[in-house]
Amino acid sequence: MSNEKFKARPGEDIIFEVRKHPAVLFRPILYLTLFSLLPVSAFIFFKFPLVFLYAVLVWLFCGGIYIFNVCFGYFKTQYILTTERLLGFEQKNLFHKSTLEIPLSKIQDARVSIKGFWSSIWDFGTIYVSSSLQEKVALHQVEEPEKLKEEIMGRVSKDNKVDDKKKIENFWN
Image 1 (spheres, rainbow, N blue to C red):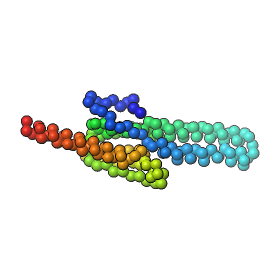
Image 2: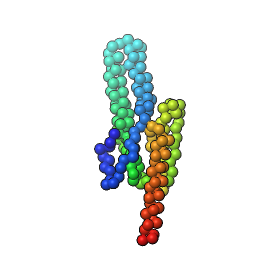
Image 3: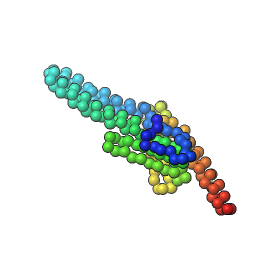
Image 4: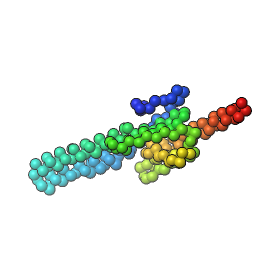
């Protein structure tokens, strides 16, 4: 699951790497399945093979582009927690990519949102992280969001304790 663009800093270890939950692909597959009824209905309605052929070609083209876009975004989205920072590589669609990097020392709070029946059943949701940089970041549709939130906040508190010790040592030296 490693990201080819991510390079860990010296002394930095990866705590976890997580992607979107596979269940998020259910809705696009459902849409594609419903969309596939279009060529079948064209064949039944027109009873003309040439129209059916055109409908199938249009369906294959549009459906292929749609499923490629969805899968590309799914497989290229990744969130990484290291001993020093929280990183996110989000591919929203083919031409829309965003990245984030928040040092653990700047993270103030994290909360979890699990919306819907399937999200509750399969335990996936969104983690909202707020930082002292006045930005809120969302880790969308990740598996076991409560567990990941606890891991993030646990690392943040450890990082803050280390920073406090360093401040005290520097104060006395």
